[in-house]
Length: 174
Image (cartoon, rainbow, N blue to C red):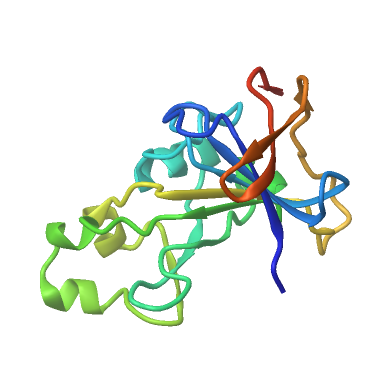
């Protein structure tokens, strides 16, 4: 299925976002964080390290192994402070340079379709950085309250290269 995508602050390296729609301009599926300026109240942002995410979570967490489709994706925050973002905030440590900090044998030990603790000695040595963040609006599996950011601002529909594009130059997210 093709989905409609709206780009907010196109080309702005600090503010750019992509809104992925199920029903255009009515029901968003996700927001892809592209700009470097966005962060959660806990300071989670593109470019933070695995060790910094552990500090924000106040605990280790689980992430998938490297060298497969879901490489470096956080799979569970456990009982940490960030567990409120389960099924809502998707983070990937798919840092292309992280493997350079470890030997080939060490890297091989954290590869594949398995979950690893962020406290794993190889993961700690690699200390990859967050390269992807996505806020999803899918119905969570648990009944716990979920943080969904509020976006305020004035929408404008403009004619773009790929047809009509909805932009918001003055978005405020809280």
